[in-house]
Image 1 (tube, one colour):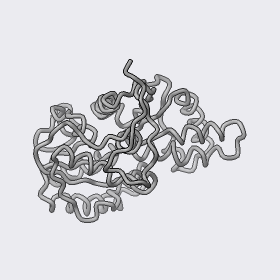
Image 2 (tube, rainbow, N blue to C red):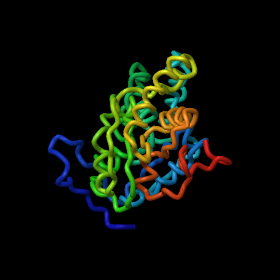
Image 3 (spheres, rainbow, N blue to C red):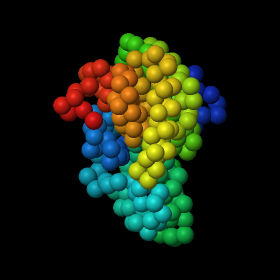
Image 4 (cartoon, helix red, strand yellow):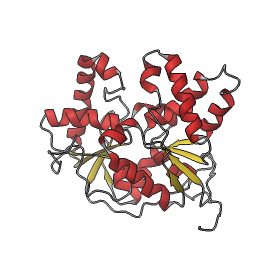
Length: 280
């Protein structure tokens, strides 16, 4: 095992950043998420590669399930509480929990403590898990002190800021700084912080509104002229990829983790090199 030394804060991080709290050899549990598990396992492998590159010892708990967000957003708080307790029991033994999704990460970090606040047995356990749960890119940048990506990527990208990642977890600068360190040319789209219309169950309950929203988003994406669309949430990426495909807009769609991990040999979610036999 590598020497257990505490990381120091990078010069590119301000004094108001989240304190570094990571040691080489720390146990890091990967919360895979439902969409990554079922539709884009390469994102999970990219997450493992990135965390291991920082010295973390990655585990993927077999007992993990959905984070409970569909039940929570539908008002079924009892089911959401049951799921939260199961997730806490599966993950609380690890030093850190990493989630390649701001949406699922926000559910664990922000809403588990709210759901279990009145339960004297589970409230402290929810708070403890919340404190050590991080969205993947935030974990790399804010917690481990990663400020430079050693992979390279040729071409221009545009980046969509997912609602939960941005508003619940303050993820904005972290992916951009790591991408720029890899030499990526980022072309910002108009209204990058505006919802793509996915919203989990929102796109199912209100498909017409969702379609209008994603139509505006894909128009802004196309206007950048970028060759690749990136984001940190697979739900958003699948929603935008579907609309881009239906509109005949040829732009590659990838999760940011795949770029940072140098896993661009994987077929994109959508775009000119898409695997139409096995793609989404």
